Figure 1 (cartoon, one colour):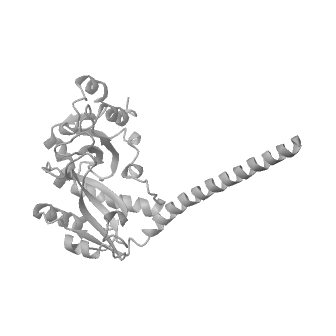
Figure 2 (figure 1 turned 90 degrees about the vertical axis):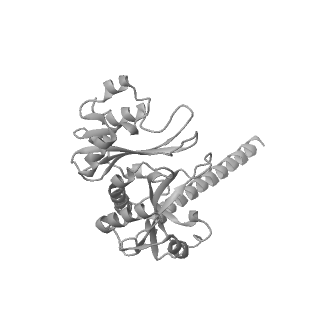
Figure 3 (figure 1 turned 45 degrees about the horizontal axis):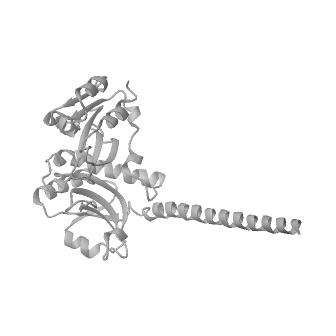
Length: 294
Protein backbone atom coordinates (compact mmCIF):
# COMPACT_ATOMS: atom_id res chain seq x y z
CA UNK A 1 0.00 0.00 0.00
CA UNK A 2 2.84 2.37 0.81
CA UNK A 3 4.52 1.61 -2.50
CA UNK A 4 1.30 2.14 -4.45
CA UNK A 5 0.74 5.52 -2.77
CA UNK A 6 4.26 6.62 -3.59
CA UNK A 7 3.82 5.55 -7.21
CA UNK A 8 0.58 7.49 -7.47
CA UNK A 9 2.25 10.57 -5.99
CA UNK A 10 5.13 10.30 -8.45
CA UNK A 11 2.66 10.03 -11.35
CA UNK A 12 0.77 13.13 -10.20
CA UNK A 13 3.97 15.14 -9.79
CA UNK A 14 5.22 13.96 -13.18
CA UNK A 15 1.94 14.95 -14.87
CA UNK A 16 2.07 18.34 -13.18
CA UNK A 17 5.66 18.91 -14.38
CA UNK A 18 4.72 17.90 -17.94
CA UNK A 19 1.74 20.26 -17.94
CA UNK A 20 3.86 23.11 -16.52
CA UNK A 21 6.56 22.52 -19.13
CA UNK A 22 3.96 22.46 -21.89
CA UNK A 23 2.44 25.71 -20.65
CA UNK A 24 5.87 27.32 -20.46
CA UNK A 25 6.70 26.12 -23.97
CA UNK A 26 3.37 27.43 -25.24
CA UNK A 27 3.93 30.84 -23.64
CA UNK A 28 7.48 31.01 -25.01
CA UNK A 29 6.30 29.99 -28.48
CA UNK A 30 3.58 32.65 -28.33
CA UNK A 31 6.14 35.30 -27.37
CA UNK A 32 8.41 34.22 -30.22
CA UNK A 33 5.45 34.34 -32.61
CA UNK A 34 4.70 37.87 -31.48
CA UNK A 35 8.26 38.96 -32.26
CA UNK A 36 8.32 37.26 -35.64
CA UNK A 37 4.90 38.50 -36.63
CA UNK A 38 5.65 42.14 -35.90
CA UNK A 39 8.81 42.05 -37.95
CA UNK A 40 7.04 40.34 -40.83
CA UNK A 41 4.29 42.92 -40.79
CA UNK A 42 6.66 45.75 -41.72
CA UNK A 43 8.63 43.91 -44.41
CA UNK A 44 6.54 45.70 -47.03
CA UNK A 45 7.38 49.14 -45.64
CA UNK A 46 9.93 50.16 -48.30
CA UNK A 47 7.45 49.44 -51.10
CA UNK A 48 4.30 50.84 -49.52
CA UNK A 49 3.40 54.53 -49.54
CA UNK A 50 3.82 56.44 -46.30
CA UNK A 51 1.20 59.12 -45.88
CA UNK A 52 2.69 62.16 -44.14
CA UNK A 53 -0.24 63.56 -42.20
CA UNK A 54 -0.38 67.33 -41.83
CA UNK A 55 -1.65 68.65 -38.53
CA UNK A 56 -3.49 71.73 -39.80
CA UNK A 57 -1.05 74.01 -37.97
CA UNK A 58 0.39 76.22 -40.68
CA UNK A 59 3.95 76.80 -39.47
CA UNK A 60 4.58 73.26 -38.25
CA UNK A 61 3.13 71.74 -41.43
CA UNK A 62 5.31 73.98 -43.62
CA UNK A 63 8.41 72.89 -41.70
CA UNK A 64 7.39 69.22 -41.77
CA UNK A 65 6.76 69.30 -45.54
CA UNK A 66 10.11 70.93 -46.23
CA UNK A 67 12.06 68.49 -44.07
CA UNK A 68 10.24 65.42 -45.42
CA UNK A 69 10.83 66.44 -49.03
CA UNK A 70 14.51 66.96 -48.26
CA UNK A 71 15.17 63.95 -46.02
CA UNK A 72 12.62 61.13 -46.32
CA UNK A 73 14.18 58.27 -48.28
CA UNK A 74 13.03 54.99 -46.70
CA UNK A 75 9.74 54.72 -48.59
CA UNK A 76 7.56 56.47 -51.18
CA UNK A 77 5.52 59.22 -49.53
CA UNK A 78 2.57 61.50 -50.08
CA UNK A 79 1.15 64.29 -47.95
CA UNK A 80 -2.39 64.11 -46.67
CA UNK A 81 -4.75 65.84 -44.24
CA UNK A 82 -6.11 64.57 -40.95
CA UNK A 83 -9.43 63.96 -42.71
CA UNK A 84 -7.61 61.77 -45.24
CA UNK A 85 -5.91 59.90 -42.40
CA UNK A 86 -9.23 59.23 -40.67
CA UNK A 87 -10.66 57.94 -43.94
CA UNK A 88 -7.69 55.74 -44.91
CA UNK A 89 -6.30 54.51 -41.58
CA UNK A 90 -7.98 51.09 -41.87
CA UNK A 91 -6.22 50.43 -45.19
CA UNK A 92 -3.19 48.15 -44.74
CA UNK A 93 -1.75 49.37 -48.04
CA UNK A 94 -0.58 52.54 -46.27
CA UNK A 95 1.74 53.58 -43.50
CA UNK A 96 1.17 56.90 -41.78
CA UNK A 97 3.52 59.39 -40.16
CA UNK A 98 1.09 61.34 -38.04
CA UNK A 99 1.40 63.99 -35.31
CA UNK A 100 -0.56 62.80 -32.28
CA UNK A 101 -1.08 64.41 -28.88
CA UNK A 102 -0.72 62.11 -25.90
CA UNK A 103 -2.40 62.40 -22.52
CA UNK A 104 -1.16 60.49 -19.49
CA UNK A 105 -3.49 59.10 -16.87
CA UNK A 106 -3.26 61.87 -14.28
CA UNK A 107 -3.30 64.71 -16.77
CA UNK A 108 -6.40 66.78 -17.52
CA UNK A 109 -5.44 67.33 -21.18
CA UNK A 110 -2.91 66.11 -23.77
CA UNK A 111 0.60 67.23 -22.84
CA UNK A 112 3.08 65.89 -25.43
CA UNK A 113 2.91 65.85 -29.22
CA UNK A 114 4.56 62.85 -30.88
CA UNK A 115 5.33 61.91 -34.45
CA UNK A 116 4.07 58.34 -34.74
CA UNK A 117 4.75 55.95 -37.60
CA UNK A 118 1.76 53.61 -37.85
CA UNK A 119 0.56 50.94 -40.23
CA UNK A 120 -3.02 51.03 -41.43
CA UNK A 121 -5.16 48.05 -40.54
CA UNK A 122 -8.52 46.61 -39.60
CA UNK A 123 -10.15 48.15 -36.57
CA UNK A 124 -8.31 51.46 -36.83
CA UNK A 125 -11.63 53.20 -37.42
CA UNK A 126 -12.63 52.13 -33.90
CA UNK A 127 -9.32 52.83 -32.12
CA UNK A 128 -5.81 53.91 -33.06
CA UNK A 129 -4.63 51.23 -30.61
CA UNK A 130 -5.56 48.71 -33.32
CA UNK A 131 -2.87 50.12 -35.62
CA UNK A 132 0.63 48.64 -35.58
CA UNK A 133 2.96 51.27 -34.12
CA UNK A 134 6.43 51.11 -35.62
CA UNK A 135 7.90 53.98 -33.62
CA UNK A 136 6.89 57.22 -31.93
CA UNK A 137 9.20 60.09 -31.12
CA UNK A 138 8.40 63.08 -28.88
CA UNK A 139 8.49 66.38 -30.74
CA UNK A 140 7.20 69.15 -28.49
CA UNK A 141 4.85 70.18 -25.72
CA UNK A 142 1.22 69.99 -26.82
CA UNK A 143 0.59 73.47 -25.42
CA UNK A 144 3.03 76.37 -25.57
CA UNK A 145 5.87 74.57 -27.38
CA UNK A 146 9.30 76.17 -27.06
CA UNK A 147 10.02 76.51 -30.77
CA UNK A 148 13.10 74.26 -30.53
CA UNK A 149 11.12 71.60 -32.40
CA UNK A 150 11.79 73.47 -35.63
CA UNK A 151 15.55 73.21 -35.07
CA UNK A 152 15.43 69.51 -34.18
CA UNK A 153 12.73 68.38 -36.63
CA UNK A 154 15.21 67.26 -39.30
CA UNK A 155 17.07 65.18 -36.71
CA UNK A 156 13.86 63.63 -35.37
CA UNK A 157 12.84 62.56 -38.88
CA UNK A 158 16.25 61.01 -39.45
CA UNK A 159 16.00 59.15 -36.14
CA UNK A 160 12.62 57.71 -37.19
CA UNK A 161 14.11 56.52 -40.47
CA UNK A 162 17.13 55.00 -38.71
CA UNK A 163 14.77 53.12 -36.41
CA UNK A 164 12.86 51.70 -39.40
CA UNK A 165 16.13 50.47 -40.92
CA UNK A 166 17.12 48.98 -37.55
CA UNK A 167 13.74 47.23 -37.28
CA UNK A 168 13.91 45.81 -40.79
CA UNK A 169 17.50 44.61 -40.37
CA UNK A 170 17.31 43.16 -36.87
CA UNK A 171 13.63 42.61 -36.13
CA UNK A 172 11.62 44.28 -33.40
CA UNK A 173 9.27 43.11 -30.70
CA UNK A 174 6.35 44.74 -28.97
CA UNK A 175 8.60 46.26 -26.32
CA UNK A 176 11.32 47.77 -28.52
CA UNK A 177 11.91 51.48 -28.00
CA UNK A 178 14.10 54.17 -29.46
CA UNK A 179 16.55 53.46 -26.65
CA UNK A 180 17.12 49.96 -28.07
CA UNK A 181 18.19 51.39 -31.42
CA UNK A 182 20.26 54.26 -30.01
CA UNK A 183 24.04 54.33 -30.24
CA UNK A 184 25.98 53.26 -27.15
CA UNK A 185 26.61 56.42 -25.13
CA UNK A 186 29.71 54.80 -23.63
CA UNK A 187 31.30 55.01 -27.07
CA UNK A 188 30.92 58.79 -27.20
CA UNK A 189 34.02 59.39 -25.11
CA UNK A 190 35.72 61.38 -27.85
CA UNK A 191 32.71 63.57 -28.58
CA UNK A 192 31.69 66.88 -27.10
CA UNK A 193 28.43 66.86 -25.15
CA UNK A 194 26.58 70.16 -24.83
CA UNK A 195 23.54 70.40 -22.57
CA UNK A 196 21.18 73.29 -23.13
CA UNK A 197 20.72 74.97 -19.73
CA UNK A 198 16.95 74.66 -20.07
CA UNK A 199 17.25 70.89 -20.42
CA UNK A 200 18.91 70.46 -17.03
CA UNK A 201 17.01 69.80 -13.82
CA UNK A 202 17.66 72.20 -10.93
CA UNK A 203 19.01 69.12 -9.15
CA UNK A 204 22.08 69.31 -11.38
CA UNK A 205 23.86 71.51 -8.88
CA UNK A 206 27.19 73.29 -9.10
CA UNK A 207 28.78 70.44 -7.17
CA UNK A 208 27.56 67.93 -9.74
CA UNK A 209 28.75 70.16 -12.58
CA UNK A 210 32.20 70.39 -11.04
CA UNK A 211 32.37 66.61 -10.82
CA UNK A 212 31.01 65.65 -14.24
CA UNK A 213 31.14 68.67 -16.59
CA UNK A 214 34.65 68.17 -17.92
CA UNK A 215 36.44 66.21 -20.64
CA UNK A 216 34.28 67.85 -23.31
CA UNK A 217 31.03 67.91 -21.33
CA UNK A 218 29.50 71.34 -20.78
CA UNK A 219 26.28 73.35 -20.45
CA UNK A 220 25.43 76.34 -22.62
CA UNK A 221 22.63 78.81 -23.20
CA UNK A 222 19.87 77.41 -25.40
CA UNK A 223 20.74 79.61 -28.38
CA UNK A 224 24.39 78.53 -28.33
CA UNK A 225 23.52 74.84 -27.99
CA UNK A 226 20.97 75.03 -30.80
CA UNK A 227 23.46 76.73 -33.13
CA UNK A 228 25.56 73.56 -33.01
CA UNK A 229 22.53 71.60 -34.24
CA UNK A 230 21.64 74.15 -36.91
CA UNK A 231 25.20 74.13 -38.23
CA UNK A 232 25.51 70.32 -38.13
CA UNK A 233 28.73 70.57 -36.13
CA UNK A 234 30.41 67.14 -36.27
CA UNK A 235 31.41 65.02 -33.29
CA UNK A 236 29.05 66.95 -30.99
CA UNK A 237 26.03 65.72 -29.02
CA UNK A 238 23.29 68.23 -28.21
CA UNK A 239 20.57 67.78 -25.60
CA UNK A 240 16.88 67.96 -26.42
CA UNK A 241 14.15 67.57 -23.81
CA UNK A 242 10.43 67.34 -24.51
CA UNK A 243 8.17 67.96 -21.51
CA UNK A 244 4.67 69.27 -20.84
CA UNK A 245 4.32 73.04 -20.48
CA UNK A 246 2.63 72.50 -17.13
CA UNK A 247 3.77 69.12 -15.83
CA UNK A 248 1.97 67.43 -12.95
CA UNK A 249 2.98 64.37 -10.92
CA UNK A 250 2.34 61.48 -13.30
CA UNK A 251 3.37 63.41 -16.42
CA UNK A 252 6.39 62.27 -18.39
CA UNK A 253 9.31 63.99 -20.04
CA UNK A 254 11.69 62.66 -22.67
CA UNK A 255 15.43 63.28 -22.75
CA UNK A 256 17.66 62.89 -25.79
CA UNK A 257 21.25 63.44 -26.87
CA UNK A 258 21.56 63.78 -30.64
CA UNK A 259 24.66 63.97 -32.82
CA UNK A 260 24.48 67.36 -34.51
CA UNK A 261 26.50 66.12 -37.47
CA UNK A 262 24.91 62.75 -38.22
CA UNK A 263 21.56 63.06 -36.39
CA UNK A 264 22.16 59.74 -34.70
CA UNK A 265 20.48 59.24 -31.33
CA UNK A 266 22.94 58.51 -28.51
CA UNK A 267 20.72 58.79 -25.44
CA UNK A 268 16.98 58.38 -25.00
CA UNK A 269 15.15 58.17 -21.69
CA UNK A 270 11.54 58.53 -20.64
CA UNK A 271 11.15 59.90 -17.11
CA UNK A 272 8.08 59.98 -14.92
CA UNK A 273 7.65 63.35 -13.23
CA UNK A 274 6.96 63.19 -9.51
CA UNK A 275 6.37 65.64 -6.70
CA UNK A 276 10.09 65.93 -6.04
CA UNK A 277 11.45 65.39 -9.54
CA UNK A 278 10.66 67.84 -12.30
CA UNK A 279 11.51 67.49 -15.99
CA UNK A 280 14.99 67.60 -17.46
CA UNK A 281 18.25 65.71 -17.18
CA UNK A 282 18.69 64.52 -13.61
CA UNK A 283 21.95 63.83 -11.74
CA UNK A 284 21.65 60.10 -12.49
CA UNK A 285 21.36 60.89 -16.22
CA UNK A 286 24.56 62.94 -16.04
CA UNK A 287 26.34 60.09 -14.23
CA UNK A 288 25.20 57.53 -16.81
CA UNK A 289 26.19 59.72 -19.74
CA UNK A 290 29.63 60.59 -18.40
CA UNK A 291 30.50 57.24 -16.79
CA UNK A 292 32.87 56.29 -19.60
CA UNK A 293 34.78 59.55 -19.28
CA UNK A 294 35.57 59.68 -15.56
